[in-house]
Image (tube, rainbow, N blue to C red):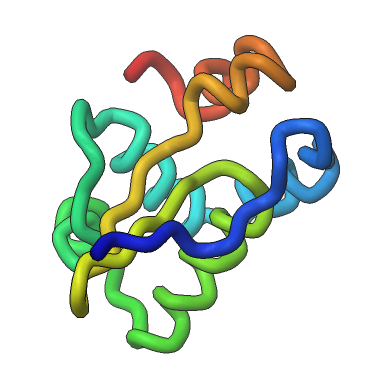
Length: 105
C-alpha cells in the first residue's frame, strides 16, 4: 500500500526555505527535470534524467530538502519512491514562483 512521506501543509510554506532549497544547483536540476515531467516519476529514474553524478546519501538529502520545503510530494511503493512537484499547492501559496525559477514546464 503506497504511503506519502511527511510534508508541510500549504499554510506552513516558508518562502525563505523554498528559495534556499532551490538555490542549490543540484536540487534545482532535480526540480527542473521533475517540473518538466508530465507524470510522477521514480526517484532513481529522475536522477538519470537530471544527469547528476552524486552519491546516494547526497541524492537522498536533496530529495528530503525539496520535500521538507514543500516543493515535492514523495510516495513510497515498496522499495520505489515516486516523486512529483506540488504544483497546485505552490501555485496556491506563491503563484508563478516555480515558473519564474524553473521556466515553462
